Image (cartoon, rainbow, N blue to C red; front, side, top):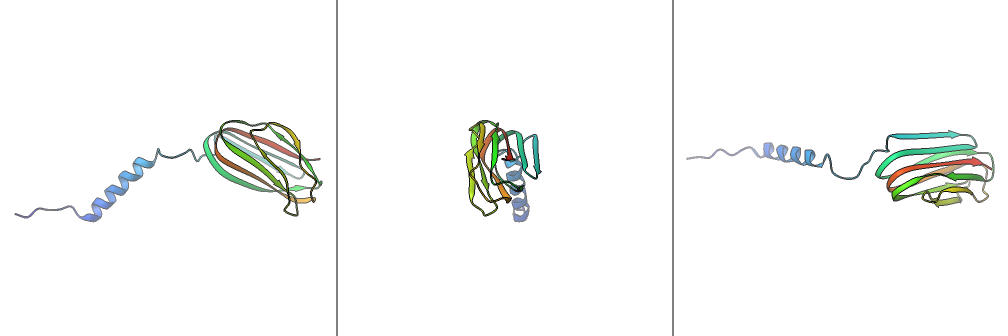
Amino acid sequence: MTRSRPARPVLLVAAACLALVACVGCGDDSSAGKDLQVTNAPDSFQFQVTDTKNYSHTYTYTWANSGTSATVNQASSISGGDATLVIKDNAGATVYSRSLKQNGTFATAAGVAGNWTVQLLASKVSGTLNFRAQKL
């Protein structure tokens, strides 16, 4: 008596499908939230993302700042994780670095006018991230 065995490729495909279905709900929320708004205008930059949950992402923007410094207003509501705002001047020097958990209005160090880099490093953040940078 011979037994019939299912073909191995069929078993592999079935196992792969089951693994995919099982992982659809796994892991952290990789969505940027319900609302991402960025306004990148000369001498004024604004960023807001709401309703994040365990979100990790790095945002990098080039911002035209005709001044040598800027004010940064941070108004975030973070219930978990952390987000760091880093701003570099036209020469690549870091003129600002602060956690978005710290709300308030702060000044950057003096830098070189021109194209500045605005970078937000979000690590497992839950909540709302909000900041504005304006030429001083």
